Length: 358
Image (tube, rainbow, N blue to C red; front, side):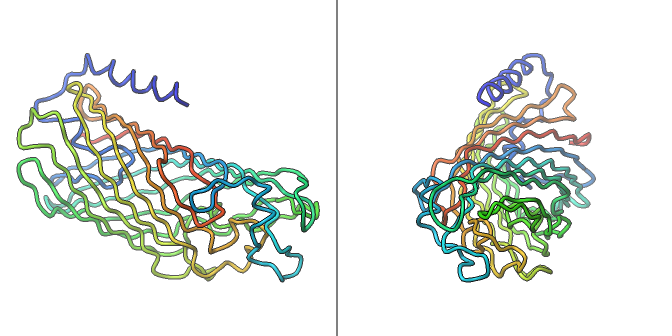
């Protein structure tokens, strides 16, 4: 992974040498590619974008401490204990999760003040597990993987300019997330009794929220009054509010994200960036009656998490100026999980933007 990232940055900087960029175009006029809804457009302008994001999770943590699979099954209670065929402690432990998401977006400005944005996604998720034998003990019975893929939720937002002055800009975001992702995905599992039933998968493996959710945010950027200034910076608060239960009688936890970044223009067509991001996600409220298993991901009260990520990125304006390429790599520098929960290892985002009028 490190070799891929290094090669990508090398290519960005190498191609910058022959890029012919106009006098009024800056590579850092867009935030790092991992920031959504970061910029607005002038009346009549539009943009199409394609992003691909990969996130890797491995190992488990409770609070700020890592836990082994054996420690989890010895000490962590099963939320469904006392129900038929349910042991007192957890007996299935997730060990690795990979999520890949392709996002297609469009932006259009009907006025100078308002930019409309729509984005949908296609998700592929895989989670590996260890199953322990019987209702007690630390003897491993075997491993299994579950997979889901399909359309995710669709977001529609309005970005509203609040102020622009001498390289400084503010805009607010108001939107809604539409429940286009499935919440009833199933797959085959391995139980502690060595059976392989097909069951409804826990919440992290579902493709959407199943509910209409509200989106709000505020974005600030500062690129200086002098166009020749090479340094820029910005920040964004963005939240997803779960305001209703879905058809399976639960709602996912609210999500809040606070980012701040700085960028530096290293060539007329290339800027490099650094970003810090604080993320919070709440527990699931309510529960799906068909999600019941001695595994932490099935417990609605084991999803609350906080994390701080550090990221490095690059933006590159291609020679004809209609296309932009963005790359960003993030790793957690601090995390607190109400677990046990799986912990994030890294995330990688790559995006292509096309705006013939920008």
